[in-house]
Every structure is written in C-alpha cells, then in structure tokens.
Amino acid sequence: MGDPGKEEYKIQCFDAETQQLLKTALKAAWLGTEDGCSAWQRSSTNCPGPRPSRSTQDRNPGAVDLEKVANVIVDHSLQDSVFSKEAGRMCHAIIQAESKQAGQSVFRRGLLNRLQQEYQTREQLRARSLQGWVCYVTFICNIFDYLRVNNMPMMALVNPVYDCLFRLAQPDSLSKEEEVDCLVLQLHRVGEQLEKMNGQRMDELFVLIRDGFLLPAGLSSLAQLLLLEIIEFRAAGWKTTPAAHKYYYSEVSD
Image 1: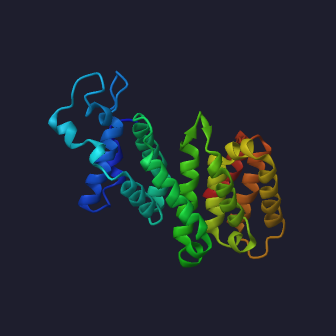
Image 2: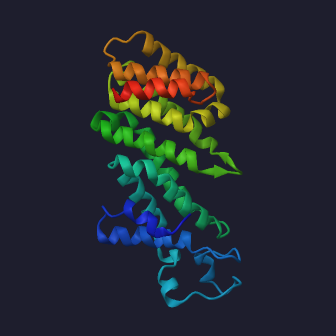
Image 3: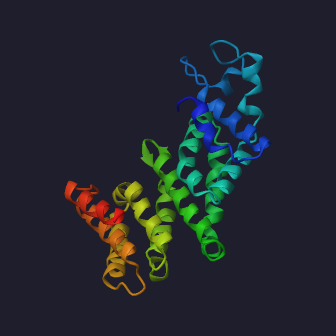
C-alpha cells in the first residue's frame, strides 16, 4: 500500500470521528517495517526492532475496533458508488496488516460476516434501493478481486459473487441500464478469475446473457451494445481486441 495520504480522498465524506477511525486503521497498515513487524506488533516488547514513538502508539490499531471499521466500510460502500469501487484496496491493506499478528483476523471476519448478511437479504436490498444493490455487487466483486488465500481467490466468495451476477442477468434486471452496466463492469473485472474457479457456472451465466441479448424486449440500445461487447470479450479470452475496442467505444461515445 502506498502513502496513506493518498487514501484520504476516499474518506473525506465521513464524519470526523469515523474519518479518524479509518485513518488509524490505514496508518497501521502503512506503518509496516523492514524487520517484518507491523505497527501493531511493535507495540509489544516481544517484537524486535525499535519501539514506537508515542505518536505511533496513539495510532496503534490494537486500540481500534476493527469490527466497527468493517461495518463502517460496508455501510458506506452501499451508499457511495465511487467508494464501493475502491474500498477493496482499503480492506486488503487492513487485512494484510492485521494478519501479521498471529491468529488475528477480526477485520476480515467482520467484513465477511457483513457481506454474508447483505447477501442473504439481497432481494430486499434491490427492492429497497437499486443503487444500494448495484453498490453491493460492485463491493463484493471488489473484495473478491483483492482478497487472497494462499494466492488464490477466496472460494467462500465464488458462489455469492456468481449469484449476484446471475441476478443481474435476469430479464427484469437487463431492462435497467444501471444493472446491465454493473454486470458488464464486474465481468470485465473478475470474470476471468471466476471462470477459472467454476467454469460451468460461467457457461450458464453467459447462456442467460446471450438469451437476454437475443430477446431484447425492453432492452435499450446501450444495454444491447454492452451485452454484445461482454459476449465478445469472453469469446476473445477475456481480452478486448483493437477492432472491438474501436467499435464499441466509438459507439458508446456516439
């Protein structure tokens, strides 16, 4: 993770107390040392390396409620479409820092619990707020993209992510450009990873997408264009050919 100052633009919209909470967690993630000890560990006499200064101790994440941090990030991700696209990197940084303390996974556990809670009530969320639903799908795909276990995507997230994308490929969702746009953007982001984890479900998802494209009742011209683009994107090995890039982006700009 780079200088935490670069992350501050993402948290300016929070109240002062919450901004401080997030900044403390991010500072801890950033303050890793060359001897392999995080700022959390350096507060302990068992860790080699220099003892932290008082200002560093004040930022010690041991004093931060990481479950609260996880809830704050999820709550705001459901309200802010820009934040939901970027929050995965923030979560990854905090998880990486916390993992340097043996046996500590408070933030990751809190994050995954909240994702599961929202997943279980996803239909209610969609009915209540289409923007909130789109933000949730964006956020869970973002988390899937960043979180790794033994350098592999988290298996626990594969089916929930697929289920969300399948919901976006239903006829009533394809009639809404916001959901079509979300479907295509997330497939661009994590489609190749998902297919490697479960190719059969990806085949089934693209059956729905192709059916939606071929039976365009209520489908806008932009939605049709986006669906055709993602069909060809996958067919080309999850790559955009120069000809396709020129065609689709000129069509969208027109």
